[in-house]
Length: 80
Image (cartoon, rainbow, N blue to C red):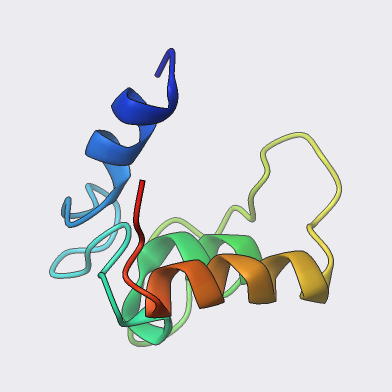
């Protein structure tokens, strides 16, 4: 992913390869977006049952406030 457009196209409404049946970003539904599960460190738990590694890889977990911003973006339509 080299720019915002590429990143958006690879995340929004695209099914996860790690958690069957879940979209990376499900527009309007942050609770069922695999990206949020990865950021919160719950991706390996039910219902996702995906890769349990927390994002960002190799870095400290994001703050609750930052994750809340991502959730707001998704719930608000995940606009580019």
